[in-house]
Amino acid sequence: MDARQCVGIGMTIKPVKTAVFPVGGQGTRFLPATKAMPKEMLPVVDRPLLQYAVDEALSAGIERLVFVTARGKGALEDYFDIARELVDSLKAKGKTAELSALEATQIEPGRMVYVRQQEPAGLGHAVWCARHVVGRDAFAVLLPDELLWNPANPPLKEMREAYERLGGNVISVLEVPAEHTHRYGIVAPGAVDGLVTQVKGLVEKPAPGTAPSRLAAIGRYILQPEVMDVLAAGKRGAGGEIQLTDAMAEMIGVQPFHALTFTGTRFDCGDKAGHVMANVALALEREDVGPAVREWLRTLRL
Image (cartoon, rainbow, N blue to C red):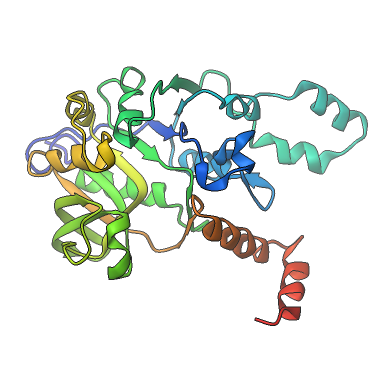
């Protein structure tokens, strides 16, 4: 039997064609800006956070984009729509560069699905809200406020390649300082093969000094549809919320489960400092604004 048909304990490797973006959070850490703007629309240089995540998904061959939204998130839908008046105005003025910049925001009709999360019950609940769209296929989950920057090797593309070899479930991880492990879902590691680590267990936000490793889940997942069955039970975990980490932990030992260490730069854009750092770092890589930003940084007395 072909390896794509039978892996580990006999699981079929189902192609990953759907990505879920949980974007229903209130963004309270960025108030007052997020009073009127979804946090996923906060810009990094000249593109919103969500655009980076969508581009990453498309580069990995994702065909269907599922946005799990909430009240007040209408700007997300408008962003990926065609702004006809703006397009016509730019065409009339011959502004081809600006028109080109808009192309990435115009997703082919029918590829985007919007689902409402009607209560803020945790990441696991947000993912579960997409169950009818996902169906019984493997799917990806991307958290847009985790900006994982590696243009040469986008993380979800690397994860998909690992998934096609290993099957089961694959998550992206990064080694964090021991004093920060209480902020993350942490992997209990098994065998290690290069950047791939077998996952023996997962602990959501372990108490200081109790973490099984320093490998933290960082907002990218390829999961089997059975995780939806676990989430359907509605078990509450840390913070009284339905935690995706807890549901994934129940899959370990039942299905293959691996972690792929991310090799690029991670920016926690759910944090103000992380968002500022992302803007500076990505600006420095740009030919149009990089020189000016670099020159300005030289003038600072740091």
